[in-house]
Image (cartoon, one colour):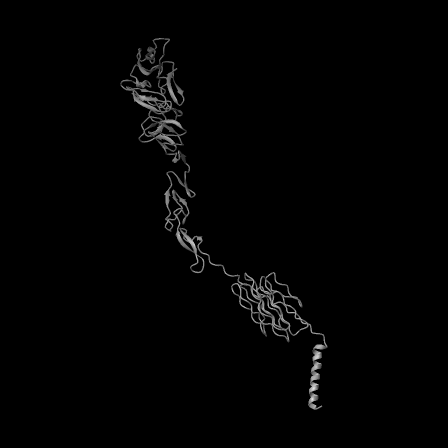
Length: 487
C-alpha cells in the first residue's frame, strides 16, 4: 500500500470515528421546543418547554411545538393560531410556517432556526378583513413556510412568532383594526340654528348635519320668558323662515305687576269678576269685591267718600265704616250724628261737645236739617221744610207740599212761637201767652186724650229753651240724636 493510500484510509477511519462519537455512540442531544413569541400588543402566548401551547381562546396565539429529538437538526416552531384566526402550519424540513392574520390584523413573524438547523421563515400570511400585512422575516430565515388556512372574520389577532433553539424572538401579532363604520346619511338631525330642520349628509365623507328646511313658528328659540316691573317678555319663537323672531313684550294688565316670569294681581289689588282691581281706589270695588260707591262718590283708601263733584249730603263712609254725609267734598258726620269731637267732624252747625253729636242747623235760623237712618242728610230752607225717611230718603219740600219739618229749634220760629214736635212733624206754633215757653205747644193739646205736642228745645241752652222747672234732654236712636225735649 502506497503512502498516499495509507493516508486516505487513515483519513476515512478518523472521519468514521468522529462520526460515531458525534452520533452513534452518544445519547442523542435533546432539543428544546420553541417558546411562544413575546406579546406585541396582545400577541402570541408562551408554550411550555417541550410541549405544544394551547390554542388561544382569548386573543393570545398558541405556543411553539418542540423539535423532534430524533431529528435535532430540523427543529421548527409551529405558528400560533389566533382566536377565530388561521391555523398555524406544521414543521416542514426545519422551516416554521407563519401564522396567518385575523381580519384587519397583522401576522406574527416566523421564528428563526436553531443552531445547525434551517431558519424558520416568515409566514406568508393571507390578507383578510381590512387587509393586514405579513409579519417581518425572522433573522437568518430560509424559505418561508406555507401560509395559514382561511382567515377568521372580524379582525382577530395574528398568531405569535416562535423561537427556534438559538434563534431570535419573533414579534407578536398586532390586533386588527376591526374595520371602519360606514357613514350613514338621511336621518333627521338638529342644526346649530334652532329654527332650521336638518338631515345627515355624507357628501364630505364624514357625517354632517346640513339644513333641510325651516321650523314652524311654534318652536321656541333665543331668550326665555321673563318679567320686569310691569312688562312681560315672552319666549322668543322662530319666525317660520329659519330665523329667531324678535322677543315680544307685553304690558301687564291694569293693576298687575311682575311676579317671577309672569304678571300677577298683587296686594292691595284683588281679583274681582276676573279683573285685577285696586280696592283702595276703584269705586265699583271699594274696600273689596261687591262694595260699590255709586255715581256720586269716589273711592279713597278703600272707602267710598266724597269728591269735588259729590253733592252735599250724599251718603259716605268714614274710617271704621261709620256712615257719614258729604259736605263740600269731605265725608263728615251728618246733622244729629253722634260721637263728634269738633265742628270739623260735622256738617255745618258744629259739635255739641267732645264725644257729643252734630248740631246741624239747630243753631242756624231759617234752615232745617233732616237725616236718614243710613247717614244721609239734607239742609233745607224753613219755607220748604224737609222730610226724613229711611235708606237715604231725605228731601226738601216744595211749594205744593211743605216738608214734615219746618223747624228744628226755637231759632227757626218767630218771636212768641214755640217749635213743637207733634204727630205730623215739627212746626212753629204761636204762644197764646206771649213769652211763655210751651204755651203754644199746649194750645195744640185741645183733646186731653188725643195726641200731645212737646217743646223742641235747644240742647245748647237746655234751661232757657224750656218751661220753668224743666230741662232740655237729648234722645238718641242708633247713630243719631233724633229728639230734643223738655223734661
